[in-house]
Length: 360
Length: 202
Image 1 (tube, each protein chain N blue to C red):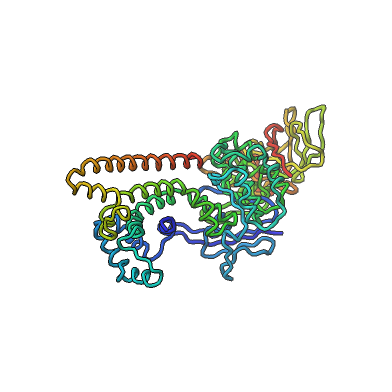
Image 2 (tube, helix red, strand yellow):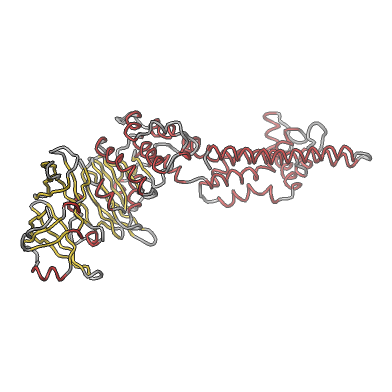
């Protein structure tokens, strides 16, 4: 099943023209710099902004098709929207806020008690919005949107106004939400960490256009994209917990057709697990090194080399049997190793520099 | 009526917006006597509206208590509209958008989101308007005359007292009452809007 969206809108100073199709249910992250058009997409999906040309369909169900004259207004569209700053009704208690959409929605599968449990809201129900912390407010806003029985959940930088401890407090709820409720979710952010933890699909938006979209592990491991040139760039690899070596305090993860050793993690064998391999932590080699503390020597083929002339570095995309890694090295290293697309190479990765992000 | 007008002026843009706005504010800038005279023309027994009211419902406004109320109402209408409109415009439009995505239609949003949020302004505006209406002079005297016990407002009574030799004492008492009412009204309006704003967490 899919969520497909096409939108074209001409603002006086900018143009937005995007088209993408992603699997539903699942979290699709719209990623890009501010002003790139992400919020326009969310507002149009909610029905609050009517673009010149727009078509939105979920599993064949059409929410908007301006060419055919179909435009469900927001109050009939059932697209839940979570704003950056919660937008709770200040004159209502938390419980009344939560029930606002529930009372106006047709009967649906999302029950009051399960949302309260899912988001840990039981102790907040009688409180007033202005007595809540930013993180609590955002959880209530998410619950309120969910209880309106949405066909599509839209989240416009829901964590952007929170400090890092508050973000860390909410992210686990979002992960639970994504695994418990089978909903298509469009999630706007410019935080790469949220991409790694939450995204199933990634849509890169630049200057009002789609630069790339697809499964998050694919899009984050393409050297040709601007995303790969960021300081905090890194490929995501979907893995499965393969074995625990308690004696050596290590866990083996299989993913992308390769094997990764990481410090022992507390996760059952056979469970899905996503890792992030920061590009600047990857060393390239022609021959396996000896007498070294390293655990991960991953063989692959050079797929692409993208230069970053500003920082005088290059990003090398290393193809694995199914997937890819990124490595940020100097042009000199590329020359010395004689790297070129199609050449074999070894990626050396410290087990401690692999970020285990959980998942599925 | 003031709430509806304020809502229309605050949240809608349409041809004639400026004209409606100007019309609503007319009583504020016109000399009150002119307003009273215009009311007399419109609502007098031979006036276009007054004749209908008299013919159909046997309602006579000129020189009656109801007429005095109408004159007061027209005079303070812009004060109320301004207060309510200000508080409507101060409300976060994001809350209205949130209510829309949660399935609330136009009237639903007006009743359950917009008006409760504007409640401090509405209440404060109402109290100020009421107190101001107690002090109406020009429009009332023109439209409803000054009949003691029927259409005589406080300032009319004070004026009348001053016309009679030895009426200074009565005038002073009435003036004191007038000052007390004004202070009380302002305090009440301030208190009410503070309490409501505290409830809204502002």
